[in-house]
Image (tube, rainbow, N blue to C red):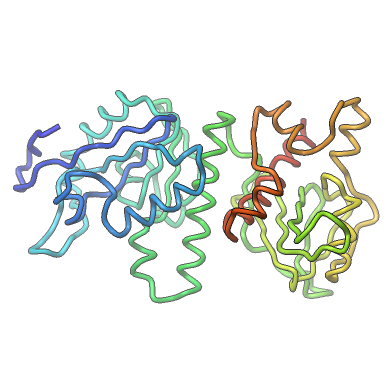
Length: 330
């Protein structure tokens, strides 16, 4: 691009990086490394975000740019862009996005989110799908720099989990062109009688185990519920209470596994595998049904267990729960 910022802060604008699949990432501003290389998102926080993006092949090849394209700094110390700088660069940002015609824009941090018209704090906007009048959806996320500055391990893990889930939301939006199946509150109060988490009627539930037989051990489980913001994910040491009307795909496998780990079982469940059989489907496996009816291709259990790390297993479980819910409401 090679144009000078009209405020003339003494640094040339950082080049944008064009993506392939209708997703663009808008950051706050270049840091010293971006200023040096004239490429966006190559500093410590940019590398961390690229690492999270690489976990989903669908969104790994995205475009990158920034709200302002010069490095805002005092001496060698990066500072937050001023409102004057944001407003001066905003027309160029919006013009760039209009030419790129993305379907999804990831707004990294509060400065980027506000420049794109989002209201409130980044904590309030994080992970939400916001429809823009420009024709694309905006999904704000915490800035990875906040993770790198955090000295609280619990806070770090919480922000990291929310960023990863927001990126999974973006992948779902790209694939299906609509809001995700479910948004889920990450915390459900324990049942006052048992101290367990309660999975309510209408949730879709999926388990991930060490094998494919009933002697397998539970690695983790996920549950979806319509209308919330994030999934529930829990580990074997946390028993749960399951209300009647929880949705499974192959409850004959999941229920004994959950029971073995101390969860209370419902009297009545819905099972999308049984429903598929009743509707005369030739094949009733979840992956086949997802590909046939949703156009969604997902990795197999064997691929995940052989090659993937813990986060990928967790995302795989959340995805299966989401697909189960979508098949159920269809």
